[in-house]
Length: 127
Image (cartoon, helix red, strand yellow):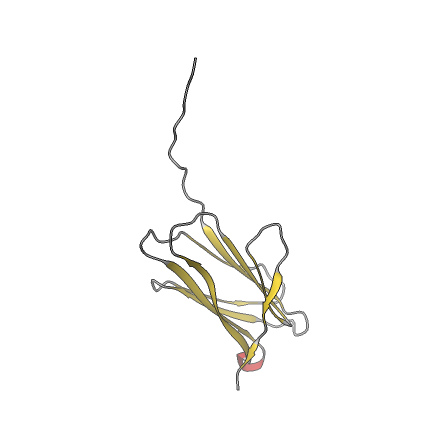
């Protein structure tokens, strides 16, 4: 006897952008302001070593791209900052992770739940 099974793809898992505050020297707050290319907006003032700020979302269907941009900043008058494109997709993806970590020396990043984050960007300074 021979049998074949065809099933529909289960629901697409949400994508996650995660931003963590590991600013050890100042133990200060991290201001996070994010928006997607359709006008959704999310912000948070993340204290040192608190649970990460998480944006959970589904990609827009092709041909519409999905993009999330965030400005993260810290220090007196948010002197140290960076404008990041934290996520971008030209087609629908499922279960993607983008993990960003604010540290004293700059911004660290990984796309993996298993692999450690690596240094990617130094902080910019406002005049």
